[in-house]
Image 1: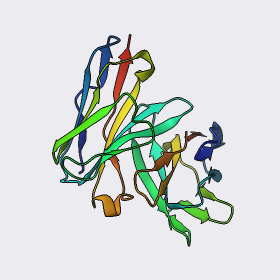
Image 2: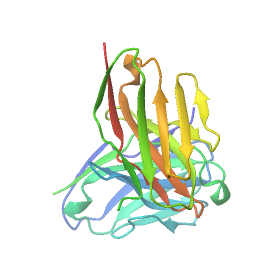
Image 3: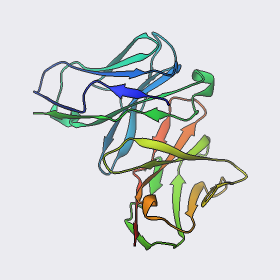
Length: 116
Length: 110
């Protein structure tokens, strides 16, 4: 079974804090993604990575950065958290690299982040 | 204008009913299409990909209409376990553009 895990299910942070969200997948997938999910807006792609140290911006990268130092791990960083970053954050992975970016994505359970 | 639009519902149908969802997309360059299912407080999971020729998986049928830029999902003989939110997903060939619809909520009633 593909497994995508995220470091926390629930997280509460204060405005201005630096926040790290970690995602690990155990299926040797090339592609990894970070989304946020908000009511009425659906899932929106923040960043994705198709290889170690490679990253590409998604639809809403502002206020976020990412790091992929190892194939199995993809981190999302909020440099200075703001209240409008309160959301559900979902990590996903898929096989195939950039050429097969549309392969099935496997999602982690999500991290509900609240910024006060 | 949103890239992908879905009727949010909710759709409340009795067991055994047939229900259909539509999803429209705005970018004619869209290349790949999917339906994902998301249970309450759970992560999305792939239900099925949508091919140009249409495809069927048991009680589920997905169709793509490129001319009108919409995809559809038909569920026959609804089961209680079909209750979930169904997400329409569209991907552009460039790869970094995945667009999810806001989801259509389905409740199957005994």
